[in-house]
Length: 355
Image (tube, rainbow, N blue to C red; front, side):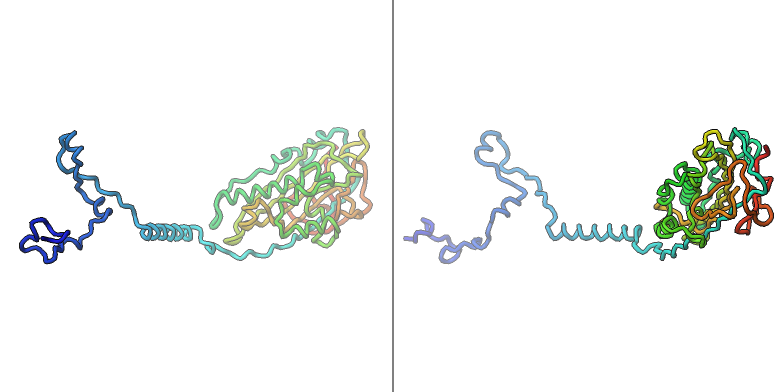
């Protein structure tokens, strides 16, 4: 009799000795079976549906292996980084910022040749003065038609002109600044590298061409004079030009005419006070982005003033009916386009209202 593992009829002829199966080395594990494209229906399924013995299975959706997925992600990150560095290279267009120059300033008082003309009505004085055709306030500081330069776009040129205008408006027309009570509105428009000089000028005024508050802005002594008419007359021009590939300059030349009366005296006559300011601004790309300016030159003529008075910290206008104790050289007209050279001049009669 055969052994317990042999077939009842014995080992077939030609079969392996000892009953060994030649396919016994082939292992049909679960993954192999599941991967098969054909699947046999169960007996129950064939009885109920009369279906064929086998059915075709949909192919398995095999995802990327973990290594392949990581490789794809690394390639994508490297490609994205290359594009970013090409567009926003940290050293692209990098320039070393030039040191900011300190402001150089000149304030020239203009002494009247006789008595300061006065009138009860400010409008009457304006109509009978060279300021009769001047515009009122910021309208007298129009922006010119701007054009791009070799290295600066239209918007950058407009930004420089706008910042310069804002500085002029705040430092020449703001009532709080004119009264001597406010400086912050002007300070915030300056390049940070000039703030120490600005602060030093107001903490310790000096007639050294570097630290005169009246070189930064227009302000009167509130104990002596006040505005009689808030409609300040203004006329002038702004011009922008590129000095090099990293710098824009704006040149401003404006004449301001103020109607003043004595402080604390309501019925006092009104007189006109004229200030001509020639300002040179400089802008680098940081200034354009931050809406700040470097004020490098300030040339001021103002009158009627007395040359004996110190105009470094505040302006002390000579009001209606007053005369100067001391004069200067030949008459200087602040309405003219030429630049005065004297440190104290005489206010030309033609610059005064005709009353």
